[in-house]
View (cartoon, rainbow, N blue to C red):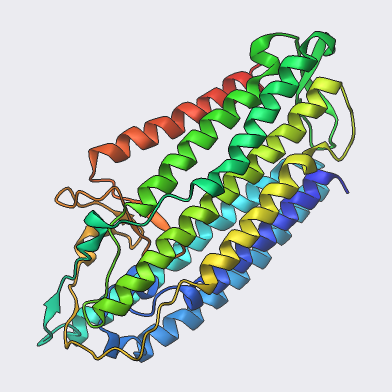
Length: 360
């Protein structure tokens, strides 16, 4: 069994596990991306849809993995297994969307917001005393990137004349290029771009608009500050491990090392960091402060700004990032013009990877 197949199965297992546990770590007042009053958080429809969703995801995951194995056995093409991961993500969203629509229908039919006092709470201290950017957590990524540059510059004269820029499913080089600055330092450019992009996202998170519960504003605001800081640190820790993986891959290329375990040099650090990040954020994702008296207000019904429960589009909201309705962390406000600039930067980074890393 090749390394690529092992990595594919690990990814399938992680995606499936994440899909199954997300309903349990998402805030109970936004089940499957639908805003509901706290008194309806345990409505039978929501409980039923959570159970049905998990069964659908579990069955779909088993079917997808089995189909990938069968296709691989017939064709012998291991690259079809990573495609199974993408298929599972698509099926995952399909299961989410079905639950989202059922809960929306029950909410409308039951008039869950009828007679309730809706409100919006703002933490004014965010302007005068915002959470600090965790510069210390950015340091590892900067050190690793700088180390990669220095090692590359020192090693450049002694690098092989032909550089392996891509490894096949069996961990053997399947694309080589003549040594050049662009080819040798391709991953360094990606490191710099990735570090700048994710550091910018971390800065946007600590300056983002929190989703404060008007029923318990003080405790909710305190928790939001903690979660914003924690998320920024987790993101910076993730980019450090990504840079570490790219340093390892660059060293293999610069030294001409050939090993069937080459893909794991990049995959293992990143997968480990993703698992740790998800575990930390999931553990801190459901805020609770029972000591604060209820104000009698509830979140406003803002489902109209959320397309399919996942995509947030609100041109009147100046926030670039907002808390996710389903899952962990933050998502872009697509209605904000700055979101287009951020997405353009991401596309440019992807094009850079394709051009330098794969195009040779």
